[in-house]
Amino acid sequence: MTSFSSSVRTGAAKLQKYTWPFTFLVAIGGLWQPRLGLLVVPVMLALVVMSFFRGRFWCGNVCSHGSLFDHVLGPFSRKRNIPKFLKSPYMAWGFFAFFGYNFTKRVITAAKLWGTSQFWDRLGFIFVASYLMVLVVGGVLALLIRPRTWCAFCPMGTMEKLSYKLGQLSGVTQRTDLQVTVSDPDKCRACGRCAKACPMELSPHLFFNSSNQFASENCIRCGECAEACPFKLLSVAQTPSQQEGASAA
Image 1 (tube, one colour):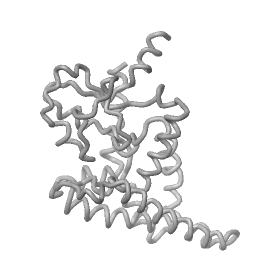
Image 2: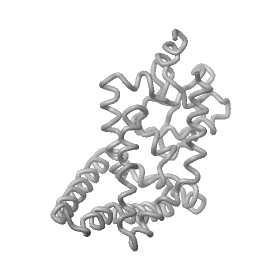
Image 3: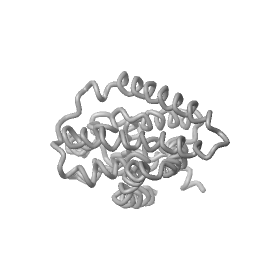
Image 4: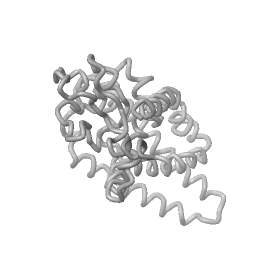
């Protein structure tokens, strides 16, 4: 089952290398064709649904912004440590509230045009403006600090964590989640290679639970830590309960 889990993640990771043009399509193309912004609606629905089952898997394996930050801007990044205030819960929730308020206000304004040809252009441009903001702000942060700096307080990431909590409460994630797993904790030398490779600056080797897994809601399941482990002890795998259930079946 571990090999199946790894193949799922590997296939998604390969896909993400090529999703970055979507950001330019919406953020730049949308300036001339605002309705291109409406393509973001199914994206938002998809990431919320996926996070219900697998946390921030979308961020590390599908997201076009993440693809841009990692594969296009990453080679030019100064790769400095992300400032603590940008990684704090206060920043994440504060920005989520700020973004949510402005987004809702703009949608309400656009709704007044319902029934006219301008409605869809106005609604689409709301998403275009959001993508353009992420492209500019996230891009600058990626170059000056670290590729995934934006992801530390991304409002969509916060929304994913909320959806993930619902999935945990419902018990669904016990059957569907993938987490960073150590095959033999006794062989781990706590070298910290996984922490150095983590784009979110997390430290898996310090926080494995009783199931030998790194159960952080901030983990984006990108697998960078697994690739960096010199002893090949890490993998993005299913939980023990999933494997037992599959074996019983």
